[in-house]
Length: 476
Ligand code: DQQ
Image (cartoon, rainbow, N blue to C red):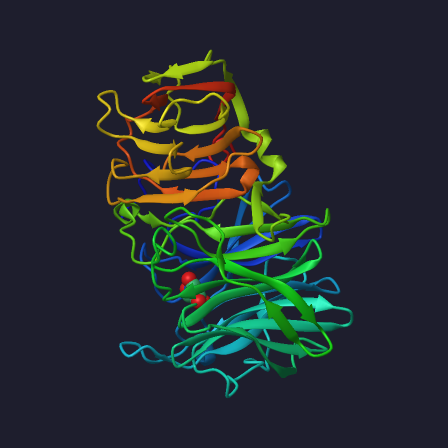
C-alpha cells in the first residue's frame, strides 16, 4: 500500500515505511545513540527480517540510515532476527540470530548466532566464520535466539532465549573475542507458569541488583495481569559471576498497556539504563497496514530500581525539547462534570497532579482524541474506590479495543500523570513512572479533543501543564 501519513507518529522511532517490530542493537557508540530494529523493507507485513537503522545525538531527533543487515547467506536464509550491539575497541559489532525455518507450520526452527562488524557505524560486514554459535545446547532447542551481549571485566557474556518443551529459558555463554563462545548454563527458566519461550532477554545490573528482562510467550492471564498476547517483564535478584547463578525473584510486568513487547536496554555515557520497546503487539490488527506501514518503538525510558524492588520507567529528560506551545488551562476543581479544553493537538504532553486528599469523586481522569460528540475517546481513568488506573480504548477508533487496569498507590496524597500522545500512540507515566501504560489508538483524524472529568463528586487539581509537541520527522 502507498504510505498514508494519517497515523504516522511525530516523535517516535518508525521505519521509513513498511513493517517494523523489535528494537535491536541499542548502543551509545562514538557519542551517538544507535537503534536498529526488525524490519521488512518490502512489505507492511512481517517477513524475512532485515535490520533497519536510525541514530540520534539527543534521543529526540533521529536520522534514518541504510539497512544495516539483510538475509543474504544460507545460515540466515529466513531472516536476521533480533540481537544486540557492542563497541569492540571502536568496532561496532552486531550479534544477531540467523533464522532457518525447518517446518514453519509446525514451528520447527534451526536458529544460530552470527556477528557483523562496522568501523563507520553504517556499513556492516558479516563475519566469514558465521554462525559463531551454530547450534543450541542440550538445555534448549532450535528456538534459540535474541543474543544480548555485554562486557564484564575482560570477558564478553551473552544471554539468549530458548525453550525446552514448554519451558522458556534464558541461557548464558561467554567469550574472549566474540567469536568463540563457551556455554555456561541456564540463567533462569520458567517455573511452568512463566511462559513456554523467553524472547529477547537482557541482563544487567541496576542500582545494586541484577535484572533479567525478557519477553515471555504464553503466560496465562490472571485477573488484570498478563492480558497481552505476550508480555515484557523482569525478575530481579543477585548474580554471582563465579558460579553463574542468578537467585531471582518473581516475574513482574514492566508496562500495563496493550502494546509493549521485546524491550531492550542500553547503558549510555551518563550511566543511564535506557529501555526502548516495540509499541505494538503480535496479532493485533495494526490498521496502518492499509496505510503502507506497521509498527513503532516506544519513547526511550530511563530505568531505576525502587525501594520495593520494582523497576520504574521515566521518559528521558531530553524529551522536554519537544515542547512547543504551552497551554494555560485554568483548572482547579472538577465536580461531577467533564471539562472540554480548547486544546486540539495530535501531538501532546500533559502533566497533571490530582489531589487525593479531599477527593469525593468516585473516579476522575483525562479523555484524549475525543470527538466533538464524545462518541470517540481514549480514557485514562482513576477509580478512588478500587485505586485502579485504567486505559480504556473501547472507543479509540479502528481495530483496537479493551480496557487495561492496574492498581496504583497515590504518593503523598497525589496522583500524578504524565502523558504523551503522538497521533496513534499513548504513553501514560503515573506517579513518576512507577506505573506505565503504553497503547496504540486509531481515532478519526477529526477527533482531537482533550478533556478532564470527575464522576460522583469532586477532585482538586494541584497543577496542570499541557504542551503541543513538535513533529521531529517532518520539521527536518
Ligand atoms: N521477534 C524476532 C525474534 C524475536 C521476536 C523476529 C520477538 O528474534 O524472538 O522478528 O518479537
